[in-house]
Each structure stands twice: as C-alpha cells, then as structure tokens.
Amino acid sequence: MKTKSPSERADRRKPALIGHNAVNQLPHKSYAFSNGHNPHIPADYWFQSPPEGLTLFVVLYTRACRWARCLGCNLPSKVSQSPVHYSQQMKQIDFIFDFLLSPEQKQDLRKIILSNNGSVLDQETLSTMALIYFVAKMNMNCPHVSVLCLETRAEYVDLTELEVLSRALSEADVPADLELAIGFEAFDETIRNDYFHKGLSLHTFEELARKIAEYSFRLKVYFMLKPVPQITEQEAIEDVQKGIRYLDSIARQYKLAINLHLNPTFVAAGTPLEQAFQQGRYQPPLLESVRQAVLSAQGTTLSVFIGLNDEGLAAPGSSFIRPGDEKLLARLNEFNSTQNYALLK
Ligand code: SF4
Image (cartoon, rainbow, N blue to C red; front, side, top):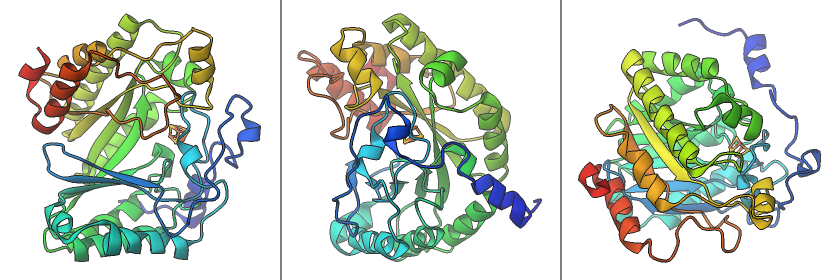
C-alpha cells in the first residue's frame, strides 16, 4: 500500500468543505445546537435488530459535522457547535461500557454503529485517540461483536488509520469486521448534489469502494426516499430503484459486502425541508413507497435495512408513519430482522 506523506495527509484532513459548522454561514438552516448537553454522556443511542443480531447505534457528543449543508439534515442540532475535548469523549465511551450496557447486552451485542451525527473519521470532531479507546473498550467488554460500523463522509477516510483500527479489531477474542457507513442519499446527480447539497461524486464513491474492497472492509450506504421537494413520489421510488441497481453493480464489481440503509425522509426541524412542508410544497414519502422501493432489491447482492426511526428530529406532524400504517410498519420491521421479501409482497 502506498503510504501518504504527512503533507498529503494534512491536505486530506483540511476541512475540505466549510471551515466551521456555524449555521449563520448557512442562512437556510435555523436549528440550534445542543451546547448545554453533558459532554460526559453520548448525544443519543438506541438498539436495532438486523439479521446480524442485536445492534447498538450510539451517537457520541462531539463538535458537529463540518459540512452541515445537506438540505434536509438537522443532525448537528444534537451535538456541539464547539470542540469537545478528547478526555470528555473518552468519558462518554466509559459511560457506554460502564453504565449504559447491561451485562446481558454486552454478551448479546453483535454489532455497534458508531456515529457523531457527522463523521467519526474527522479527527477535528472525534479524536483518533478516543476512537482507538472505543475499540479497546469494545474488545474488552463485548466479546461477541462481529462488526464495528463507522459513520463518516468519504473525504475523511484514511486507509492507514483504518488499517490500524482493523488490526485492533482482529485482536479481540472474536475478531470483528470493519464497516464504513457513507451517506449517498440520492442516486440522481442533480438531486444529490444540486438540490440536496451532498457534495459526493460517483467518482469519489467508487474510489472509496475500490480501496476498501482491497481490505475486505464492508460498506453501508445511506439512501433517502424523497429527500427533496422537487421530485414526485414516483420519481423518488425510481431514484432508489436506480440506486439499488448501481450499488449492486458496485458490490459485484469489487466483491464488496454492501448494506443499503434506506431512510424514508422525515421533515427535519430547522431546515428548508420544513419550510417547504409548511408551505405545502413537500410531503414525506408514503410507507407504501418504501415497500415498493425495497422490493426491487430482491435478487441483488445487497442486504437492506429500513430506517424507521426519526431520532426525535422530525418537525411536529411530519412523520412518514401515518394512521393506518401499523400493519405495513410491522412487516417492514420484521423485514429488517429477516430479509424476507415475502413480507413486502
Ligand atoms: S447529512 Fe451528514 S454530511 Fe450532510 S450535513 Fe448532515 S451530518 Fe453532515
């Protein structure tokens, strides 16, 4: 593997995008940050039940995402506007393994998704030392975790760092795989970059896929159903279907394990999507559209997880779950744990 020079690495670490997460640079966002949160406690956590088994999704409380411009995103509102010291980040990690998880959960856990509502591989938000500390505590406390998933933007992926983390994961009694979780959001370039402001090119994504395949790391890719007001319900379904075909081709080309994580869009408070919703220009997608979109992944190499949790970030009255959706919701939840496509027919 070619090693990057220090200047190359420093260059890659530059806030490629915007230097600060100040919302006042982005007048279209009006949410506030959670600056009063106790920095010794994670911002949030919950459990999921994918086929891999019990999964902890934990959001560390750090400085917010430095991109902060994706149209319908208010994830930074759950974290801090200013840096959180690495020692405080490590206290949060102690909290997870010393208080949050019960002895039974530590034994039962099969996967951990580590997030900071931005990029855990951006060392300006989550310190590298804290990340390594997390792996050490996980290895010592959760002997059956087989996958550690790291949420990040693609530009912060440093293969040298990942190689070290992967080596540390392999030293556990049960070696764990490393998975990267990348927000792709929409397949169509105009929707993704012009309307949603994701700032992700196909070239960047494919380079990442090619590189991590060499290390046998896994990939989790976030897509959103109907992420912007400019498209119809049918166009939203078709965009996800195109995304599924594309990801399947990438998975086959690079022999890469890809999990599609499809989030039906909720209206995040304090974003332009909320304004569009209030002005009657946007309605969240129907759960029925989620069913149709996911069905097209049958027969592909992809595993699929449907995000049915708005993480408490939705504007009032803007959920994609409506009265009468209960039975379909139960089937989608069961699909998440079984990958049984018969539930979607
Ligand atoms: S979607 Fe992710 S990258 Fe985009 S602003 Fe939100 S946290 Fe940052």
